[in-house]
Length: 411
Image 1 (cartoon, rainbow, N blue to C red):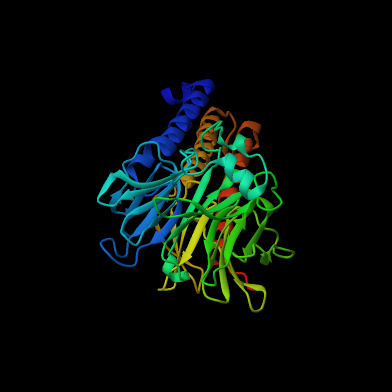
Image 2: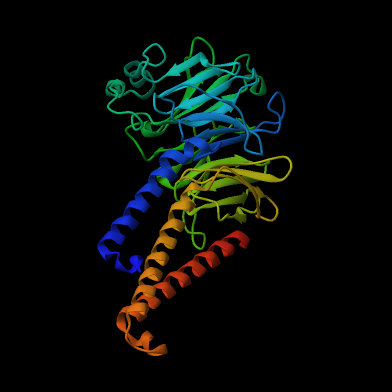
């Protein structure tokens, strides 16, 4: 048969070429045809024109409003935006943390090409780093104005809208996280854009190091996931005193790039422990963890929210879909988008299995031995061992996935 005459080197070249094509298709072509890919920040829209939809900030360089069925209802059309976070404002517009261009922008919901307000870390009219350093920190921070590369200059990775009325003010403000500057700023959300409050010091990473998702709690305190220092801190906004600090100790391991800490109610916190691929619920009264939630679809969950109906929604930072879970049981009840980072490893497994199965058949046909004695030939039993190992590995992965799917920690 012709197939038996295929040279080994040609088959290897074919397999490598197919893997490259699968890789290119999975990560560079397929994302253009799915509604959700690499979701970071995910927010549920409770009312209005897009009621019961989700505002999704995606690594694929845009912000979308998507229905639970995956239908795109609205999306940005601004080129060059690499966003980490977005909020739907009370006026209906969309607020975006534009990481690529080190700025916060407000986009008109009715005209996604129209930027109606912005705060730019590169614009001296918005912030003068020399003046800020001298007046606020007593330091020379003039070097901060020199942008040396995109993505890792400020790496502006979060913006949160603060309703001033809620705190007895007649103006609103924004909490902005400058990840690489190790700082959180509160900016007046008006044309004046003055700095109302700040926390951190670019030259002292012991205060903050590469933080994520600062939030202003109902108490008026500010919580920050101090990711680089493996902790969560709650700060008295007025005094800047740390009133609560959380680190992990045995047997819970330690935080690995903790990125979100939401106030569920006065007594509980929903924590996104990203690189441990889990969500944790911490009880402030008992000072202990009461729940750990995992999902086989988690690929570095970025942030999570508990909805009023008892569901938890979570983004993924490494090619996974948006995940919907039941808070009480921890069971995954739905996903939006394709789990693209599951596709490539599975294709590698089947490629390895197919390759060895092919040569098993070739060697069986070439063998001069009869019956089961063929299995004693090195070339044949070697392929059988490889196939067996690959099947055991697949069963093991399936067992681990199902274990994580069902497992809940209570402590």
